[in-house]
Every structure is written in C-alpha cells, then in structure tokens.
Image 1: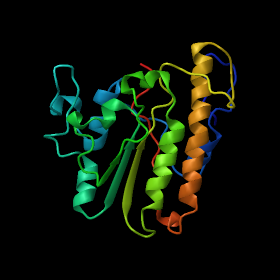
Image 2: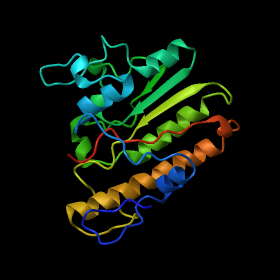
Image 3: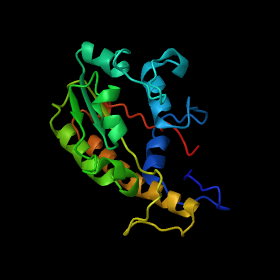
Length: 211
C-alpha cells in the first residue's frame, strides 16, 4: 500500500512506482537500521558488521579504508562491474572510502556547493546520471549499480509540478516521497527496457528513517 504520513487518517498516493516494485517482488515488513544517521547506518549495511566492529573517527564517522569496502569490493574481485552514484558530499567524499570497490564512482549529482545539499533536490540529476551509466554497461555483463538517493531528506522541500499535500513538515515529507518516487519509476523503466532485464535483481531500501 502507499506510504502514509503519521498525520493522515488515510494513506496518500505518495509512492505508486515504489509500490509497483514491491508488488512484483518480495517485501520485508520488518527491516531495521543499525542507527538513525547515515554515517552509522550504511557501513554496517555494506559489510554485515555492527558499528562496534568498525573503525570510527572522533565524530563516529565510519571509514572504509581499513574495512575492505564491503560487498562491492567482493563483487569487484569476482569480476562484476561495479558502478556507484552518490548525491551527498559525505557519501561522495574520498576520505570515508565509500568509493572503494567501485570501478566507476559517479559524483556528478553532488551540488557544486556541497554543504547546501539539504536545501536542494538531487533525484533528477542523480537519475539521469544513473541512466547514463546504465547505457555504458554492455547487456548481459554482470554488474552492480548502487544509486544513493538523498530525497526525501531534511529540509523537506516543495517541488513544483509534483503533488503538494500541505505546508506542515509531514505534508512536505510526503511531497518529497512523491517527488523521489517519480524518478525511481524512471530508473525502473530504464532497467525494464534493457535486453537483460529478466536477469536484473532490484533491491530498494533505506539506510535510516527520520530519527
């Protein structure tokens, strides 16, 4: 069913494309994050380790420089073409090692003024970059395409031309989901048009919620 805002008495049509994906596969209703922030949520997800098992900076930012880069690095060693795309400076930045294990690391969707990313929407340029990377992957070749979307994310922005549910934080949050959902649909359509579409597995998940 569509994702519902806590402030609503009934579900809102925020995620028809994501719902379409869920309906065609397996949906896990009980999936838990290790933390309520990206820097402590994604590294365990990529490595199957708890935060306490990983090296952290004084700000508790986990670095992959001594952790092997997680499963992308394992796939790379097995001859799988690994392509990663990010739209946030933290994920894109080399000091934290997220690019380890990727043959291609595309940061073209990161805003020029990186630290203003919370005031910008990045789903559209990120999707276009992902479509371009897909076009460069030969059909039938084994590949990993990791696309890290930032929207929805504070600050919750309004998107002209997309559904507007109101002015509260919860309303704008739902609007951001609808905005992201549109571009998720575009990426899914691009995948579906590939000659090897029947052999592609799509995994959709979040690193954390609004803590």
